[in-house]
Image (cartoon, rainbow, N blue to C red; front, side, top):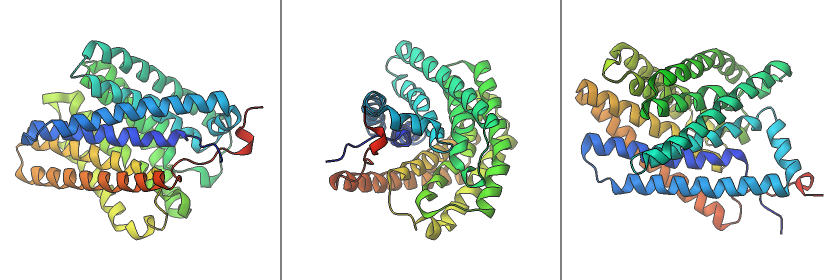
Length: 322
């Protein structure tokens, strides 16, 4: 029986559960929904992080060659940014219950996020890259995860620090977006990598939430509406591209879509609450409902893969300890 290994990309499950839990918390505040379901999702996110962290540590101990190959891969290495990002979301999950314990977790995740982002930036400067490797996961180390870092900093009250992170993540997103979008339009994605498009939606939606959290009552409506408009535009494109996206068989990478949709719902809920707009509230409710349907679909698909023993990829021969 082949040994199964955990790719770093599988931490997208933790992100999807945590952000859906966060969306439920926003919905509880806006519509007085029962809070229990959101807290169950947060608990599952924390448990998944602990399990995946243990499995990933085991990968480095028992299959170091495979772990090193992933860390050096020009595309797969980007997914390592999901680990500190997951820790930041775990800190947010624990914040209402033990804020003094959650703060150190946030700072550990935040520092690791910054360090890894800077390291990947230097690596990308110093190594040549093929056009086919300019894909949405490049957003993860210093755009999407940095914006999550900024959002969490604002939630913990570190507003000035959060704005600095917002600058790093937001500007990185704008710089990267032109190159990645150009490659998508000219080179496309192969069937096996089309769930990368779930990551493509992450920067605009996280920027929408992070901006409103950091700006608070001083959020400029024009900026909020502009960010929401672009985020909705991207999701409209993804919805229309579903026949193309669905050419890839179901895979654990589908959890990336749940993160984007759940975060979009949060951004619209914040706007609906602050601008007292019935239209925004209807849009937020629609996106929130779509989030729950998508999470159930991806969770069911993941359970089916687990039942078949096909969820985790097998360890390559090169990954076996010598």
